[in-house]
Image (tube, rainbow, N blue to C red):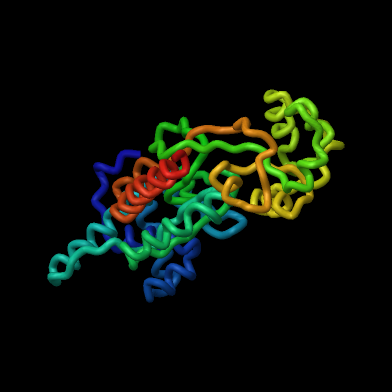
Amino acid sequence: MNWRSVNFDWNRARAFLVTAEEGSLSAAAKALGISQPTLGRQVSALEEELSTVLFERGGRGLELTQNGLELLAYVRAMGEAASGLSLAATGRATSIEGEIAISASEITAAYILPPILHKLRNEYPGIRIDLVASNEASDLRRRAADIAIRNFRPTEPDLIARKVGQFSATLYATPEILTTLPSPFPEELREGRFIGFVSNNGAYMSALAERGIKLGEEHFVARTDSHLVHWQMTRAGIGIGVMPLELGDAEPRVEKVFEDILFGGDVWLVSHRELRMNLRVRTVFDFLAAELAECFRKAEN
């Protein structure tokens, strides 16, 4: 879309912004303290002015169209600029505050991020954190999160990424399980019992097979798609599980099955390119990049 020829009415832009953030006309009208019909007319007027549809009705309420998503980043920046102008005019210092949505895997969200987010909150007490703990990659282009931590580099041109470290993982088991395993490894691991995954166990088996550990489904005594549950079952002695070295080595109830590193790769901090215009997102992105890089450096030493 070409926004350069549009003379924005801020009331319409604000109506669009709050509707996008609240997800419904009724919630947005309540947040703005105006009637729903008035809000609806402002949003419709903006759509008419731009000659485009900004919202579609979905199963969970209003959903932004692609043009709506493009406009949202600009209007958010306008809102922050207006707030900054207001603070400057009244002689108050601009602060970093508001909501930030961060997406990370279950393991990262549970074991790595909490102390970092505690430090973030101490430095920026106005920040409110929505932590999305999921092993599925959040769709940053649809604004499912503001910032994501991923184990792969994104290829989409509208996303930006910064490498913050590397991860390494291998197999762990309790000493009781290890005493039942013959040597040498890894060929004889076929006699062990394993914990797998429900949705992608085939991919996990293929990855193990590439490293000389050829298993069938009969070798898996338990499966779960939750990496946290996978790890708890490993610690309980149900079977052999996989975990990053910095977490597995720190757990006294388990030991490495062998010293080889089976899995590894880079860790990336990712955000939508347009969100870098947002002071809050840019500040948190840079903070997380520095803290995660330090965290992974310590893990390597």
